[in-house]
Amino acid sequence: MRRYAKLYWEFAKNQMKVMMEYRIDFIIGVLSVMLEQFASIFFIKVVFNHIEQINGWSFYEILFIYGIAATGRSIHHIFFDNLWTLGWQYIRPGQLDRLLIRPINPLFHIVADRLHQDGFGQLIIGLIILGTAIPQLDLAWGAVEIALLVVMIISSGMIFVAVNLFFATFSFWMIDSLPVVWAVFNLSDFARYPLTIYHKGIRTFLTWIIPYGFTAFYPAAYFIDKSGFRELALWTPAVALVCCVIAYSFWNRGLRSFASTGS
Amino acid sequence: MITVENLQKEYKLVKRDPGLKGAVKSLFHRQYETKKAVKGVDFTIGQGETVGYIGANGAGKSTTIKMLTGILTPSAGKVTVNGLVPYENRQENALSIGAVFGQRTQLFWDIPVRESFNLLKHIYEIPDQEFAETVSMFTEVLNLEPLLGVPVRQLSLGQKMRCELAAAFLHRPKVVYLDEPTIGLDIAVKVRIRKFIKEMNKIWGTTVLLTTHDMQDIEEICDRIIIIDEGRILYDGGLEEIKVQFGQKRVIHFDLPELDSPFILPAPLLGMAEVLPASEGETKVSLSFDHERVKSSFVISEMMNRYDIQDLTIADPKIESIVEELYNRREQGGTYEQVLANS
Image (cartoon, helix red, strand yellow):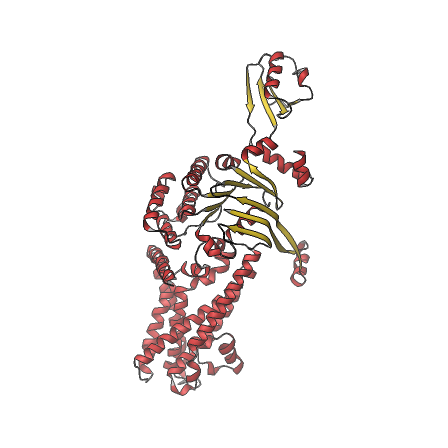
């Protein structure tokens, strides 16, 4: 574990150097993601200029959900973005072979190969949104709440990672599963709003099949009393853990299959 | 130390009928066929050997190397490298092997070569002192000094390949697999790379398994060659022995300036030597003969008795022509056994 932490740092240092080298890319990347997020928040704001509440949820409550989603997603975006490229950057051109003959875990290698600058834009926006929403929510904030919020956000990030890893793993059989990963990832947009506004089928799907509900809505619901989801919300870290275990086992299975078929 | 016993690999391929119709058909109803890439290969390579693993395109070379490195799991058979089964202990095995795959880079694309080496140092956990010594030695032998600060993506092919070689040997592996390390390189870089490989083999006793289509690589680096064709071993033995076994055909070129009438083979050589079609002018004659049956000196003395020879050269049997002949014989049909028996 310590070895991998040190190794990650060595990889990250180089990534940062590259980022600094491409200064303009860095700035454009960060700004474009921030702009994208601002646009969707602006849209919510416009909606709320006309109505008071959506299904009992106020503007700031929705903003709070949104903030958790954005911050959680930024963890995935900064540190695990390379999972997207498994098919076209590693499997199709045969680069995975190169990782397989190194004395380190190949998944670690892929993840460490990239630190994504655009994710920092996401992180900044997420924090701004949270900072805006929380003071308006009339909640009592103590150390426990803050610690819990951090745990929830990390769990949210890990769920994003696990879902992407799971679907990226299909690349071992189909060369590049990017379209599938992308389609599934887009479902996470639903999870940025209160799940109670959706049909029951969608709600169940986003809770138990692809648990994007735990990336934002349930964690936020924990802090908002009236939601009625406080107990379920506490399971968020466990859900994240289970997702990671399932995704990683599936990854290992894909890797074994890759070793027996080749590319 | 590498042992390979009855190593086999088969791939499952989708069988497709030609045309769009075939493509649509295969969408709904798939038929598979198995292609045997490696059909039972056995060999043992000792520590410090330099082995050329050669064969035509698609002969099964790369598949074998992938199994030796642990990237692929064999369909049948057994491999051990330094006592480990590579595909079962891939990461552990990786610590003591190095590899260069001709067209793929081992280096990190966006960062300078020096930083690439530094990352490899951490990946392989090379001690500081050892790392510093190795890098300074490689820098000298491969002339890397001007390249160290350049990002890998900006290097030319030859520059990149020198860095690749250095990266493969950086952790002083016991075994190095080189899959076409000289492909597409100019002669000066080739020479430098060959020299480097030989030197590493000498200093550290690194076992080298090399695949290449450049027979000069083989002649200069390898003591032993294994020839594979259609997934089977055609020849395994010393480089000198193959010249003896397959290269008994010798050719001597004679320069006969005073030759004015068409060349006639001296009577004692009839049926023993063959006149090769003349290439340059009328005054040069080349005789080909079986080195086992006729001595070179006999051919020369008979020629001297009959003609006024100004100059002669005895062509050295080139591994290239031997291998070419082996492939040709295979292509003209016949089983491996026949090919070997006829040669």
